[in-house]
Structures are given as structure tokens and as C-alpha cells.
Amino acid sequence: MRRSLAILTVLTSGALTAGAVAVLAPGANAATTLGAAAAEKGRYFGTAVAAYKLSDPVYSGILDREFTSVTPENEMKWDATEPTQGTFTFTSADTIVNRAIANGQKVRGHALAWHSQQPGWAQNLSGTALRNAMVNHVTRVATHYRGKIDSWDVVNEAFADGSTGARRDSNLQRTGNDWIEVAFRAARAADPAAKLCYNDYNTDGQNAKSNAVYAMVSDFKARGVPIDCVGFQSHFNAQSPLPSDYQANLQRFADLGLDVQITELDIEGSGTTQANTYAAATRACLAVTRCNGITVWGIRDTDSWRASGTPLLFDGNGNPKAAYTAVLNTLGGTTTSPSPSQSSASPSPSVSQPPGTRSCAATVAINAWTGGFVATVKVTAGATALTGWTAAVTLPSGSAVTNTWNATASGSTATVSFTNVGYNGPVPAAGTTEFGFQGTGPAPSTTATCTAR
Ligand code: G3I
Image 1 (tube, helix red, strand yellow):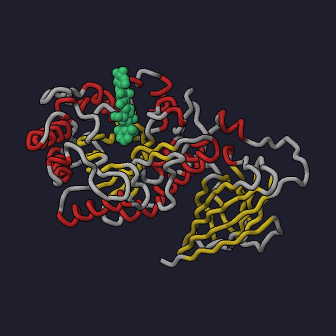
Image 2 (image 1 turned 180 degrees about the horizontal axis):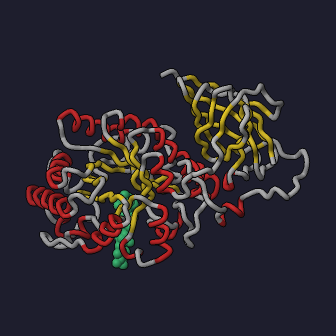
Image 3 (image 1 turned 90 degrees about the vertical axis):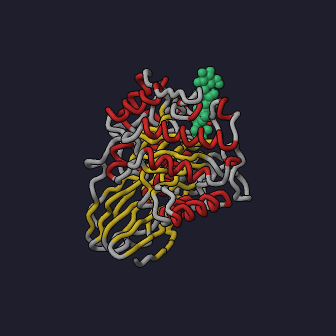
């Protein structure tokens, strides 16, 4: 595969040489939900679900419309499923699982063995008694759900934060370093069809913690310990931003010969910044062939474990946010009608703009290979904030745009115009926003023009 990278910035300027191109009509037959759009990319789009919220029609309505996978948020944890040693309670988890299966949704099981959310009796065990209790728990729960689970988080959060690369100290860890592989072998024996995942946070970029997980997974693969996937929780905020090497990190795990999944995505913030970060995380998964799907950790902001950070795709009233549209567009889908958040952010074509005050530049980065390319375009506002923008890119004869994210493509000749979608039209003075498109045929020109509104 040949790859080339070229970057060129062009301020508003004249048109370039024409060549014949074909552009798929924007929105034609495009999926209109997260789940349908992800499915067209061969992936699921899931959410964490709380059993007690299923009677809320707004909640369950969004769940059934948008999501193709569910993860019980708390109902499968050790304290929930085995509150008394040897006595198992599956009622709440069964409600979620059976409902999901009836609706054709996949189920991610979460979590069989974890240092947290242990019932009191387990917290008080140690040594062989705890090891045996852990194996029995994994076996009983995985057996109960045999055949119903797409992927299990077999072991959750077993590594320490920081630079040591060490295992997290816990009662489970103190039963012996082999407790993780023992849990995986028990899970495989109980449910041979489920994908078995290791799941953790702060492992989303390359760092000491993810390096330690990488070493463990490499060792498991080398020794034949059953493991099929690694889950990257992806809880992002200002203190823990989306790492710049997120995609590369997902890819290096995939290159070990297993699947990767984004398992608990949430991104604190609001507006364009939050939307752009969600789009970037989504793009990373789409760019990694073995990234099976994305799960967001809740539906509405008010459902989140950190609700004050408004980290999810729907607001407290169940309305889709800019972040929702960004994810949907990145997946190749489109909204059927403007959402409330979009319409408030969209520029109105009938509003006259003060002439000459707004300007923008478009920076094009091309990643090309024989027969195809991906273009990433950065739009930068001049000294005055934008209400909208259009970037025009010239394609050579034989090129075709097949997919656009975070912009709407139009034009059937050589110059293809990409106009902002609702949430990324407004760009602050000197601020930036990005969109991209994918195509077949020869790589396009690295020149672009930007028209400001
Ligand atoms: O159900 C009880 C309720 O009866 C009681 O009145 C109330 C008082 O605190 O607690 C309720 O249970 C809480 C439960 O969430 C349901 O809301 C627990 O205290 C609380 O600890 C629990 O928090 C969960 C947390 O994991 C700890 O298990 C969050 O909902 C859940 O989102 C969070 O999820 C974790 C993943 O499992 C692993 N990765 C990190 C992620 C976020 O922390």
C-alpha cells in the first residue's frame, strides 16, 4: 500500500482545473440512527442501560430507536448477581438481556471479575477461598447467560494508574498473579461462543498502563490463554482528553490478533468542542478494521454517572445534541430533520451578513493509497467568527467521493463543495473545525477554497 501525505493551505482563491467526478447525493438512502449507520460500517453502536429506567418511555424509546447493543450498567456486577455467597439473583440483568435479545440488540456482559462492586462477603475473603469464589462466580454467571452474550468484560480494571505498569493491588490480585488468566479460562469453559474481553480505563492512548495491558495480552496470545478482545472505556474530559494516538493504540492491540471495542465512551463538555471530540473518537474506531463497535456510557446526560459534565449524546429531555449529529454523520448517517440543538446553531440562509468581515482558510491533508484516499480538511476562521462555511475541493477525473463526515457534499463536477452541518457552522474567531471525506480513484488535489458566512 502506498501512502502519501500532503498539506496545503489556500485562502479564498480561484477555481482549479476540472475533471469528471461523481458525488453520491448527500443523505440519499443514508441511515438515520446511530445503530443503522454503524451497521452499514459493520459495527454496533451500544449504550449502558439501567434496568430501573426501562419503564421511562423517553429512555426506552431512544434505546430501541438508536442502539444495537446494550451493556447492563450495574446489574451484572458481583454485588448485584451474588449478594450472598452461592445465591444468585439475575432478575434485573435478565430484564435487560431478554429485552435486548427480543429487540435484536447485542449484549455486552459487564463485569465478571472486578476489584470494585464486590459484595461484602467477597470483600472479606482472601487466598484460596476468594480464588474459588471468584471462579465459581465467573462460571455461574457466564453459564446463566451462555449463548446470549456477544462480548464479556471478563476482567475489569486490573492495572494500576500511573507510570509503574503494575497490577492494581486488590484482594483478587493478592490471590496470585494468575487470577486474570484463571478468570478467562473459566469464562471460556462456561460460554465458548462469547468474545472474552479485558476492559480498562486510562489505557486509551499509549502509556505505561496500556503498555502493561499490551504485554499481558501478548503473553496470553503467546501461551494460548483465551482472550478475544480488549475494551477501552474512553471516559474523556479536560483532565483526561482524547489521546492523539487513540487510533494508533487501538490498532496496535488489534494487530495482536484480537478485536478492540470502545466500551464506555463519554466526553464531558458541550457544543462544537464536544461534538468534534465525539466525531474523532468515532473516526478512530472506523479506521481500525477490528474495532467492532462503540458503546456510550448512558443515553441522556442525566443518566450519566457524571451527569454534571453533560458527557452524553442526548440532553436531559432526550433531545439529540450536536455530539449526536457529529457521531451520526461520522458513521455516514444523516438526521432526517434538524434537531433542536441543530436548528439553534444553524445559519439561516436568509440572514444577510455584513460584507467583507468574515473570512476562512481550508487546510487539506490527503492520505492516499492505490485506488482510494481519505481527505481531512481543517477550516480556520479569520478574525471574525463564522456562522457557516463552504470549502471547495478539486478532484481529478475518475475520482468519486463515497463518504463525507461533518459536512454535506454537493456538486457533480470536479469542484466538490462541502458545507458545514448544523453543529459545526459556527466557528469562533481564529477557531477551527474539521470535516473529512473518503473516495475512490486518484487522490484529489491538495488545494481548497474556503467561503465564509
Ligand atoms: O441502587 C442504589 C440505590 O438503591 C441507593 O440509594 C444509591 C445510594 O448511593 O446507590 C445506588 O447504587 C448506585 C449505582 O451506581 C446505581 O445508581 C451505587 O451506589 C453506585 O456506586 C453505582 O455507581 C456505578 C459505578 O460504576 C460503580 O459500580 C455507576 O452507576 C456506573 O456507571 C459505574 O460504571 C463504571 C463501570 O462499571 C466500570 N468503568 C467505570 C464506570 C464509571 O465509573
